[in-house]
Amino acid sequence: MGSYREFHRRSIAERDSFWAEEAKLVYWHKPFGKVLDYSQPPFAKWFVGGETNLCYNALDRHLAARGKQKALVWISTEVDQTRSFTYEELFSEVNRTAAMMQSLGVGRGDRVIIYMPMIPEAAFAMLACARIGAIHSVVFGGFAAASLAARIDDARPALMITADGGSRMGKVVTYKSLVDEALKLAKHPPKKVLLFKRGLDPAMRIVEGRDVDWNSLEKNFSGKSVPCAWLESSEPSYILYTSGTTGHPKGVQRDVGGYAVALASSMRRIFCGEAGESMFTTSDIGWVVGHSYIIYAPLIAGMTTIMYEGVPIRPDAGIWWKIVQDYKVAVMFSAPTAVRVLKKHDPAFLKKYDLSSLKHLFLAGEPLDEPTHVWITEALGRPVIDHYWQTETGWPLLSAHPGVEKTPLKMGSPSFPVYGYDVRLLHEVTGKPVADGEKAVVTITPPLPPGCMTTVWGDDARFVKTYFNDFKGQLVYSTFDWGIRDKDGYYFILGRTDDVINVAGHRLGTREIEEAVSMHPDIAECAVVGVADELKGQMPLAFAVSKSNSFEKKKLEREIMETVDRQLGAIARPKAVHFVTLLPKTRSGKTLRRSIQALAEGRDPGDLTTIEDPNALEQIKQALHP
Ligand code: ATP
Ligand code: MG
Image (cartoon, rainbow, N blue to C red; front, side, top):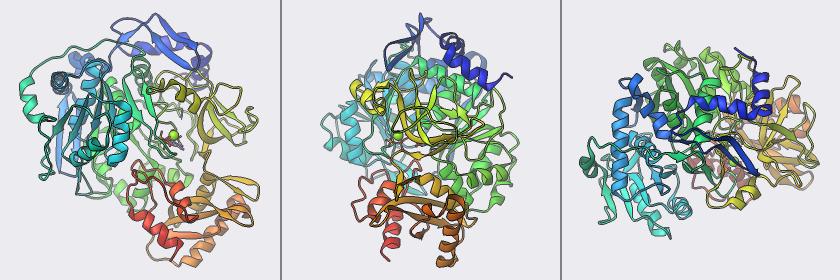
């Protein structure tokens, strides 16, 4: 095994030869002429002139060696079903789906919006788009009609694919009726809607002439094979809108060749997933993690990917670990929010199953506080790797690289810059690099590596203006996250640049205070926001979830304040600590700090279409105005 430092150095200093080597991990129908065209900064074109196809790399390429191996296992604890598909079977499902889509007029470059629950047909649809060169835009099932309509009007799809419904915590979530509503609101609705019926919503309406029944249509295309469209490396593969935590969603556009290479490479260098092994990513296909690490990367690597419909605590808090045992999962990928949910349950669930197949658990999506990192590491007895990335990057940007070198992990840190990324911490005002131990903005000096977004869909100017405009006079990509690097080179993410509290001139990241609050052993999780204060400008206000149901509020509040005093100093001490049983979060598990802050300051909480459980906001209101 080599050294991480040298690997990273080569990826920047000897960029072309480095990436030419990594590019051998994927199949090229036509070899590329040039590794990188960076003649129009900040737009990067990777593997210029090369022709490939994501679906070919995910399926066709494996048929000879692993046709009988499982490619996709779908487990639903919502409807108590398991379906699995070998590479051969998945290949024929995808071909049939591609033929169905073609029969509805979809061709290369056309957009297809996929608004589906976590069912195998959603994976067929994504891979079928990739096969024929159509551009998918998967919209997360939690979005409301207006949000869906906005995405329809931005992407202008030729086709929408949906299902009658999904299920969450045993309750039916109707998808089709929401699509109907969205299509009424949209200015550019597609002509056809392909509908997969699960029998979950018998009351669903059918619009004659527009809605096409999946099951009837597929009968016409059994055994049909559809050739792969060979796409130039920089042609778009998909559009994915960001979660919208910080406002308007942006249509992240991704390429074909660079993405395939980044994913294949990351499976080897970061995730250590080998062909024939299983990978279990607990995300949703509506998020970037689902695109990259439920669908494309594990299949490109020849693994068995596990797609899970359900929650981590039903039928009980051991379900994920049972899946790890039953399917000999080698690589698992989840989010800190899920771990915090499990933390509220009996840790015995983690000891009940044989987890010996598991090499690593990877966590991403939001800050992993040190106590949670320690807790899950001890409970699992396996290395837990925090890694940091964004919808925009498509794959990790900070991570440990166990496939390159087994560097020691530090709790609460996503380790080091991923190869290919020239990461710099720049001072928010001067734009100059800061010293170790100083908090600054995490930036990437372009070109962005393969796999990252290539532009904002339909709006090149917005790409430059949104991401490369934060430091006047310098063309650098801003992540809009705070970070700090310690003397050993480890990075820590301190939250988003707009999540800052200014207490009497001291700038404090909400994450730092949250971390301090979480140090109290009775706290499961918390959110800290800044609220206007006459004296100090702003004051932190904490909302905490206790591990137990019976506790003395005043006493716990005092202890938490003392903990914060000890960790950060009295300047960071929250004005008050309110106790709730859950925090308002997006469906992707991100705390809606802005909405909490708005409520605390008596303002409108804003767009709440992505909220997981509206009850949580009620609790915040209650806590603020008992
Ligand atoms: P929008 O950009 O529309 O507001 P979003 O930023 O919430 O949405 P994502 O791209 O899904 O949408 O989330 C990326 C963000 O999540 C990062 O910028 C960072 O703030 C946070 N994040 C992801 N992984 C980590 C991590 N390991 N540690 C800390 N923060 C993380
Ligand atoms: Mg973002």
